[in-house]
Length: 278
View 1 (tube, rainbow, N blue to C red):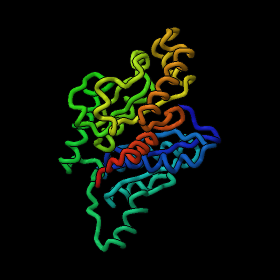
View 2 (cartoon, helix red, strand yellow):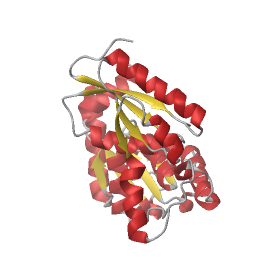
View 3 (tube, one colour):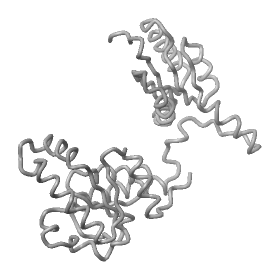
View 4 (cartoon, one colour):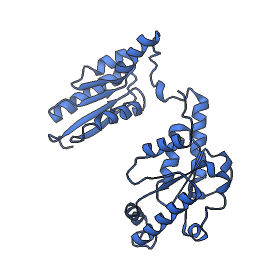
């Protein structure tokens, strides 16, 4: 491992659980510093003082190797464990301390300080809904089946490789949204109408488009040099798909420069899909 340069900095995410919360909040903060490259290290499942001592040593080793303190995003709930880790030679961003203590004062109650609370399956209904949504998205990926489209919360349409599958899975995993997706293919454009299974569910449709140039790049990674991946064909398909979506009154957006998170949030807003309550 090479020591970081001046424009680099090591970031450590420490958690008593998976570390997803620490990473999510940490990434939001670090995104404000575009001129610096951050090297990320994860230390999850620190749920005992023995593990806390090990984590502290690892942070100290990083500081010694880098010649500067690593930035540490922590979501450790247990105060004893947290105090051990915070003895390390790092710059600490204690996320629970920042948010939980003011909420305790405002709500007039103490938090449970339960380790791993944010990513447990204690709410069985919510967890079950997410698993069902993931299975639904996998079963209904790329128009594999027309069965139970009535059970979909949203049906994504667009040309092949426009981002439908990753968006469907993200909606399922993050929000428990049942998302099917259907490709728009040359035969649909020749007929001048949506695939036969979709018109009864037009209110659930949402379209994804993409720039022909980016689509060409993506398709060439999969089938290099093919007619399917050629820029001319990509331009033709994207134009036809956008014309069809406009004609059918299907709301759509371009995925070219948008993240999956941005696309999913737009879909939730456009189709008024209620987000899960914690």
